[in-house]
Length: 162
Image 1 (cartoon, rainbow, N blue to C red):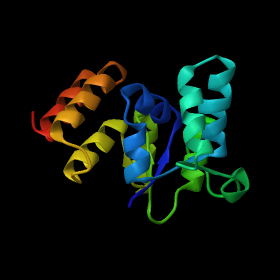
Image 2: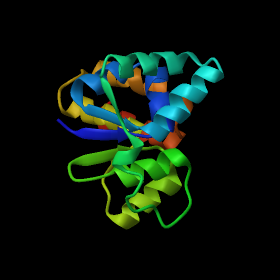
Image 3: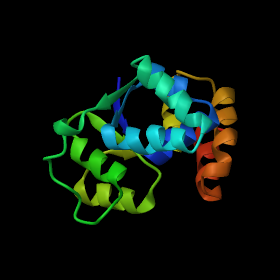
């Protein structure tokens, strides 16, 4: 089972597309305290429904929140990023994969040799791992479509096998 560290942007997109339960069932999903602050606490203050859904997964321990003292002293990225991305960079370690859709952060992760996936890649991983059907994967990709670039959407559909 892969251990995925999910950033705020992906953590918000995944429930909107309806496959957060698939992620938590098939991956060990973690977020940092900073990502929790961005996605849940700030989201609740703005009355975003996704924030409540994410908090439910945290409360049920389907998503683990990594305490700040476990990563805050670790190396930071060379370029400035938001608190969430910086904390994921710091919390990254052996056996972990960062889930992000932020292109500049992805470039940084590549430069550092760190493993990463985008939220659409998770759908592909689920279908290739036979955790979900092609039909369900296409359904999730369609639900994710408003939140991703058109070329990424087309590539996902192609990889799924439509």
